[in-house]
Length: 130
Length: 274
Image 1 (cartoon, one colour):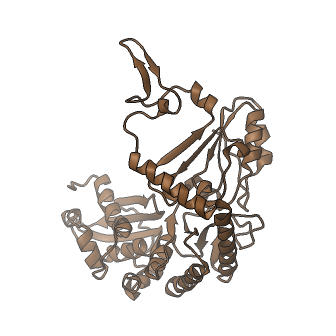
Image 2 (tube, rainbow over the protein chains, first blue to last red):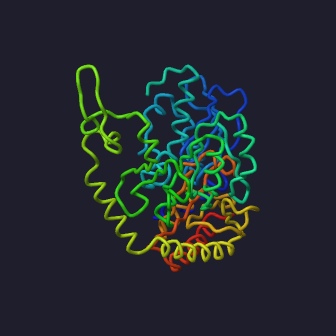
């Protein structure tokens, strides 16, 4: 399970995350954490005129799963609509992470970036249905 | 609410207590007999004496201590002592020991069957202590299980258990010192030199590696540790650590388990170290 969970792909995203940083003038600007384990993410994003994610960046600290998921998520979510993000769930996140099967204890880590994005979109006043 | 500070070595700074007690308003001092994070053994007898001198009661948390060493509530000067079956090879059942005269003076907080003696329309008389505090059907199976656990541990001997743990934790700390990126909580300089006697829990953090990841890799190697705050978030704040991993040793552990832990930690460094 260890070699499966900590495969090279995840570790690469953990050590060299994509889109790491903060966007200026972002309409989505949200901080979220997992209080029980200390994973924290700050997500910023801009939508285009068609309501699709144009740019997204993240910064944060936490376990390999949460940070690798965040890195992968910022790539995965580009070009997606608000509605498509609203219907994203664990299955899609696990597939995004290379088909990994997460144990109960790590699900919250992997979902952190998605939950942050959903909350961020909600708070910006978009008509997101959760 | 006031706090007795903790030193970097994980020891209670008792010098700070008298000023906190000076205004005479303290009602209760709550103190752990043995830390489930630092493994430290605070000088609770002294705390109790200082509490009593200031007119306060002392409530002791024995959840970690009672399973791991001989505990004499009278000798310690406890007014109340709480502990739990689940940390002493027993089922999940909580125990609160209290001095008789204190329990006599306290009103019940839970009402129900058997905690009453007489019930009229306009008054009720409570049953004697301890029944006054045992409303309703008790946790029967759990209590019987606790009794079995007490007999089991008594047969081994609490002194023997304590000595066994001391040996293993000393070995564990020595071997952990081999890993430069492992830091034991409550060891003064963040290093591995612990002067005082301590119990068989070792909470540690590693440079640049999240405890969640430590425990996941250890788990795959057959080593179980706890990762997180261990129900002690303020303590982690004090040591400026977001979370930690904790290895705890008990009667069923031996030095081979320590060796397995060290081997697995080397793997953590290999997989996640930069």
